[in-house]
Amino acid sequence: MWIYVTFIVTISIKIVYLQTCSNFEDGIDRSGPWYAYIQTMLSTDSCCNLCNAEGTRCQSWVFVRAGGTYAPGCYLKQNIPSINETSTNKQYCTSGFKQTSLIMSGRCAYPGGIFELGIDRPGYNYARLLSIDSHPACCAMCQLEGDKCRAWTFIRNGAAGKESGCLLKNQIPPISNVPCVACTSGTK
Image (cartoon, rainbow, N blue to C red; front, side, top):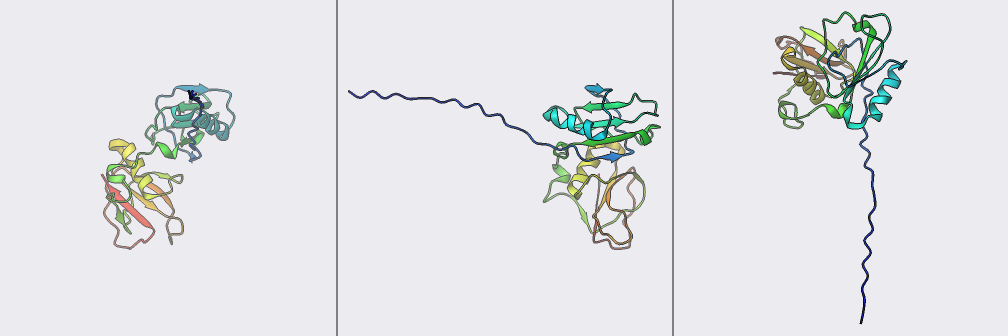
């Protein structure tokens, strides 16, 4: 008679969800609800590293330097709040968010999104974000901003006579008559 013995081996595997919040936005105040405030943080790097260590719970952060009306330190957030363009504390703030937190769906899905390739819509900028590195991400950031953002233009590095970055707009400017190969725009 043969006896078969089956061994069941259980292996515990820890899945590490790597994200980055290194998208630094100097002079941007993303006020709003926070789940943790750490007064002892002394730098944007340490605030960003703490957000990374928090895993999926932390989606964005704001580091506030002394001098403004906000208490200095690191504020960790479970979402990406809209930009507070009327903040009197902008010069004391550096914000950051995890690129993986941006939802590339609907109008912003790539490929297939509704993009105006080679089109510049100059004017009506309320924010210029250097941390955004693609037009789908710029579109997603505009969607995230809600009704405040009506249009956007993403300008790649190297565009002659233009500053690169994601330009969020509070109105829908007309399309420029000057072609811009490095530009991609969109409206809501």
